[in-house]
Image (cartoon, rainbow, N blue to C red; front, top):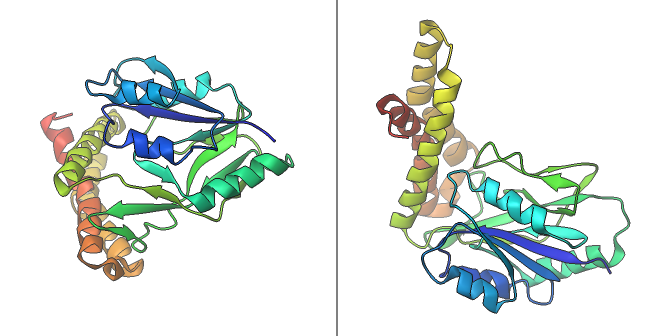
Length: 258
């Protein structure tokens, strides 16, 4: 049976980390955690679970720290998680079967993910299956480290798991707004780079697109076309704020609030 490294990059995750690590008991042969100099009990909790811990700075693009954790892994396969994610029992059994058989057919697996938002898992609005590439053979996968929403890049053939990763990203609406604002400011920095060397006509079109076209299209697509309304008021709130990220990020860019 092949061995598994579970890797995480964390910062002030004392409320989430224990539940995450509990979900990989009996599955992980090694736990690797890169901590962005947490000020709470995150590191203490990690060490209680026998994790190999590296402390570094808390970078704006946290995928840099995730890649550090990936580089530290020593086992055959890597499972990269966030502290607010749990491996379900069904998914743990599915991963064990892959490690047991390991036919060399695949170098990685996309994992369906259920996202919990304000009291329910969102199953419509484009939020499920929300495939994420987190499980891959050591040495065959890496993160580009350019965007906060990027996926891992895996060499070779990639398959799909059937069971879902459980994601609990927002403990409250205020916490959601905090993360939403942080992502938007990062996005504003990307817009700033994209605007370099553009002429006035392209800048005007870009502004119109981000302020009007993109948010309208996104709201229509997620809430109506992908039936976000089936998820009740939570589906509407999620679709609305997902759409608003475009004008808000552009305004952050204009005002220099990055």
